Amino acid sequence: MYLIIGVGFGIIFIKAEIVSWFRIQEMFRLQSFFMYGVIGSAIVVGALSIQVIKWFNIKTIKGDKIIISDKEFRKGQIIGGFIFGLGWALTGACPGPLFAQIGSGFTVILVTLISAVAGTWVYGRFSHKLPN
Image (cartoon, rainbow, N blue to C red; front, side, top):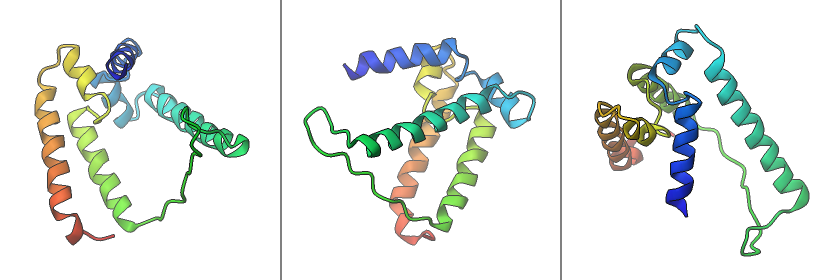
């Protein structure tokens, strides 16, 4: 089931051009509103969905209560966000659509995938020494 949903999302991402390196570069060069519109609409849908879950006390399929805990702000989020955005701008690939880009024939993105996995490993290995 997850594979089918993932393939479906991949096709939608490719057809909508949100995994396009050119669209991502347009966004970072402030040449197009397209990607900002996609990201902004995702934020709105996500925020509304969370509010609906809270307002109507929606439960999981198994009947368990959905608990959305408050998040604590840390200065490391700013540093991490900057590094994430820099990597996104340099490679033209966000971790979400990496597999869709590879699946659509952009095999050079394998370098980005390997780098993302390596970066995740480095973070996990040294996270206890990084600022909060």
